[in-house]
Image (cartoon, rainbow, N blue to C red):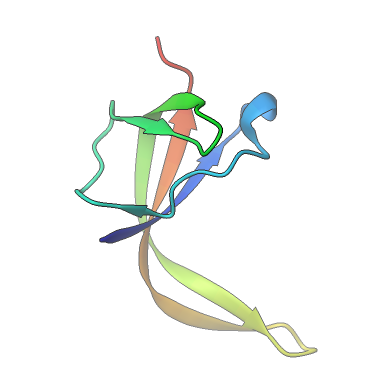
Length: 75
């Protein structure tokens, strides 16, 4: 499984729940479905390190690689 974080700048989809893991590597142009059956298209993929925040001083801990997936409307 491939860990991902799906994001969109489309207001009507911001509070939707998107997959957090993909079975195969995502590609630009693939379609992604939310838990409420909304479908958007992968527009951009960024390889990055995931982070977690802990403690009162909000220290940052790097947790490992993740793909950040930017979703947009289908055209």
